[in-house]
Amino acid sequence: MIETLLLATDGSDGAVAAEGFAISLAKSLGTRLRGVTVIETARVQSLRTATLGVAPPPLDAIEGFLKARADAVCQRLSERARAASLGVECECVSGAADDRIVERGESADLVVIGRDGENQAFRTGLAGPTMDAVLRKTTRPCVVVPSGTNLGGPLLLAFDGSPGSVLAARLSVEIATRIGAAVHVFVDSKDKGRAAARFEEVRALLGPLAATGRETSSTLGRPDVKIVDAARSVRASLIVMGAFARNRIHEYFLGSNASAVVRTSPVAVLLAR
Image (spheres, one colour):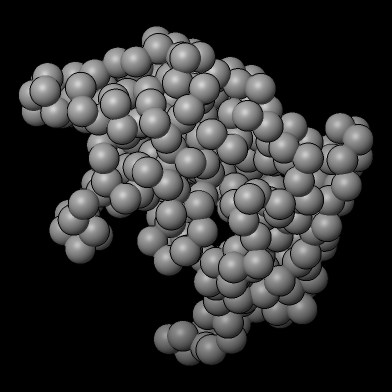
């Protein structure tokens, strides 16, 4: 049962979509919303020691700036939530961003984080290191929100028969029922017979919701690309899938369909655990 959402935000342009998505989702689900923003003390600590005979700059002003910015992040979130007639508790904490977010997430049922953080304009990659570290460390279901997306369409459930996708199906039922959305299903399989069996399995998990959406399967091409294409075709606002498939160790080191979908999807992705 989803009762508490934790939103991680850094106040950046990339966090705008995550804030809006979390506010809309919390209001639609009727859940409590909490926010957290992290003052990354490592930035200041790295300047405390003279290097090559060059003295560090005055740090009080830097620390004051980081604290004032964190307070402004919470203030903005509070104002956005208030405008949506929703209450929010926002906390400023210090430390490594991914560790603090994971810690605070342990007391939430769902974590929401933006895909594109404050350093987006200076990266060559598609996703931030904080987001990636949170996804690896957290034990909670996590929604990753790219810039420019919002909640306002059906769900796409990507189902492969793994334990993670079973959890994803159950989360899809809860969310879709509470927000009044349809659930479309995508199944990737090497043969039509296995795909048919998986559709039977997922219909049993979805119950009456199985009749609300489209069913799509594919035996060719990369699964992550097919999942994103299916989400576009049904105009989904949220992809729901397992964080790991059958071989979790293999995927931890070599990457997975889940991480590929997160990095390329134009809509939010919920990774179920």
